[in-house]
Length: 123
Ligand SMILES: [Cu+2]
Image (cartoon, rainbow, N blue to C red; front, side, top):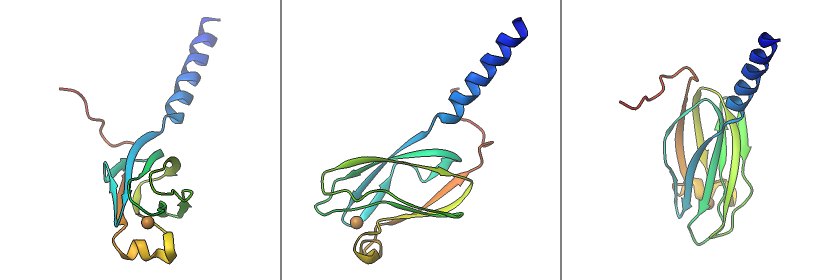
């Protein structure tokens, strides 16, 4: 009986850990994509998008077989966009106006590191 309770507890805690997405703030302006961090851990990432520009922008992630874009964000709007990323190098950019925003500078490189990367411990 005791053994069953412990096993159930382990399953519950690992499910909770897997569902935990890392939140990353992203600011979109003319003509920049600003990301709080350019290296992220593998797993679900929630980009918290904020369009602080004066025209509609978007956010697109490409790399390692991922091709995913957020909805279009009119000026002043915010949105959350979650995507599951594995280790590798990605390009994130604004796909608006046939990639003319990307050409104007709205593009960044993003590096995703393995889940086994050493965690920062408070010293
Ligand atoms: Cu844009």
